[in-house]
Image 1 (cartoon, rainbow over the protein chains, first blue to last red):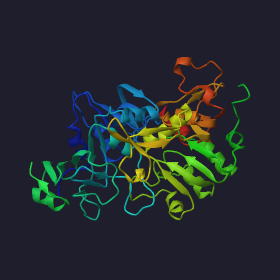
Image 2 (cartoon, each protein chain N blue to C red; image 1 turned 120 degrees about the horizontal axis):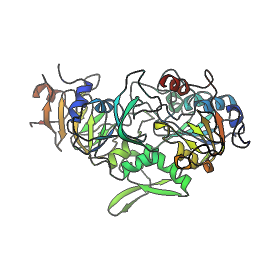
Image 3 (cartoon, chains in turn cyan, orange; image 1 turned 90 degrees about the horizontal axis):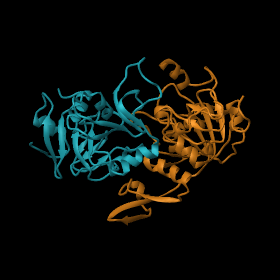
Image 4 (tube, rainbow over the protein chains, first blue to last red; image 1 turned 180 degrees about the vertical axis):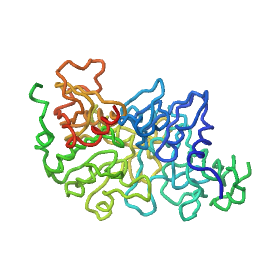
Length: 211
Length: 246
């Protein structure tokens, strides 16, 4: 099956970022968005650890080891960057100043719920900043592989796992395309090259709605 | 020479009096700001039944570094309060996890922004606050919420600590601190939340007054003990990594 690789998924979603947005990028595939060429758009990337205005991940030897993004990768700073402590970083989040937060997830539901903090009956979980971000950012976008390693769908009618926040996801990028939760199903915004509607439907646990 | 009082010669002396049952906050986020040297000294010191507050218990990366996971393995920890009690990738396992699953250590899972604000509140004389974070999730089950201006909020309590272990870039002998880049993270909050703040410092301790007052990130009022990080190999990880970066 063709489709998008991880960087292409991030690149496609980054095309949705509008000029002037403050964009929070979460651990995993979302952090790849800061590598995308954003052209003339003025976009500020925010990391939960208080880094405001960062750019691409730097190659070994060029990195500053005091500087990491949410995923612990050594990133660059863009002109006008600023550093704040954790309480101020989450004040930015909680007060609604983040235009979009991009996160990974285990599952997304057609009603906009998503789950990304605890697997099945595991005793522990990893919330990180996800609940603060999802409850308070103006928009929530998700990037994830369309299916699990064993081929089970991750885009579902309803989440099976404990939800992180209810009803907030408006856009989902996967290796198969770009989808928008639409209540009873997912609206297909775009399919990745070589991916048919039928292929995407078979891999999805909810109805797909054409364009 | 630095003034006696705040400056300690070595990590072992700086953590020597920590009693069993202490509540300790550990700074750091994904490396920068993590007090590896103080944690290593605490592993040797051996205090037990500790409550450890941090973003994560650590240990997701190799090579392992002195972290809360190692304190757990060493039988020193009763409880952790963290934003992660499992790895972000489900295929990874934190060293902490099997101890938690066997019930040998307690854990309180807290959203990261709530953790930061609970520490900030403790340092600011505020006993509790309402936040929109985690409303409607499993974490809010059975807890006090309140509708304010039409939106539901969850009550969260301040998180005071007996000790904070943090790592800073520069300090003067009065305890005024500067952090470098993303090393700042939880450091200023934990310093304010703790009764006794112990700082491992990357650069040699500066004389009082050597840091421009306008450039102080954390006032020495919140800092009680300073320890310069020894040169490698004892001074661990980001010291070496920082040298590589220069």
